Length: 152
Image 1 (tube, rainbow, N blue to C red):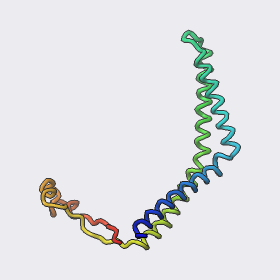
Image 2 (image 1 turned 135 degrees about the vertical axis):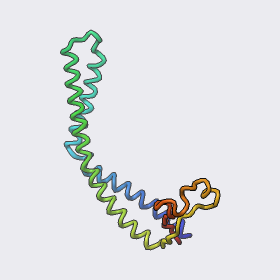
Image 3 (image 1 turned 30 degrees about the vertical axis):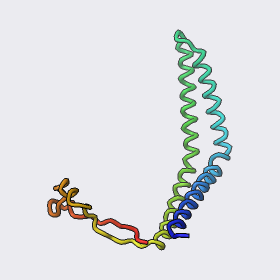
Image 4 (image 1 turned 180 degrees about the vertical axis):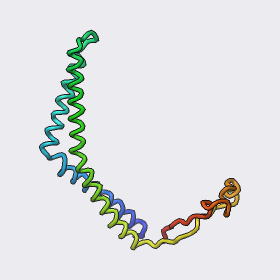
């Protein structure tokens, strides 16, 4: 089995594991909590109720009915905001875990792969002639930059 194929399988395996980890964290911190379940049921109930009221209301409806609908929309908006805040704590946990995982995987990959620094130069003269402002010495930013290329 070639090294490139093994690295590809490692990357796919890591991707699947991190996706499963993210879903597990979200399930533990959000979906199984009573607060989330209560808010979700309340949002669904309010949205159905609001849709029914909007269907039954006519253009000649009084101010009082319109104000009731506006109040219900405001309640629905507040409940949606609370629902988003409940989900936010899992997003922070997932972000923290993924940052740690990226550091770990970066160290694994960097041990397997050497890096060679080469100057980035235009590949041919035609490209260099199309961009005369990139000639050396025309500005400090025009100096060739250095790129890191992996070497196996």
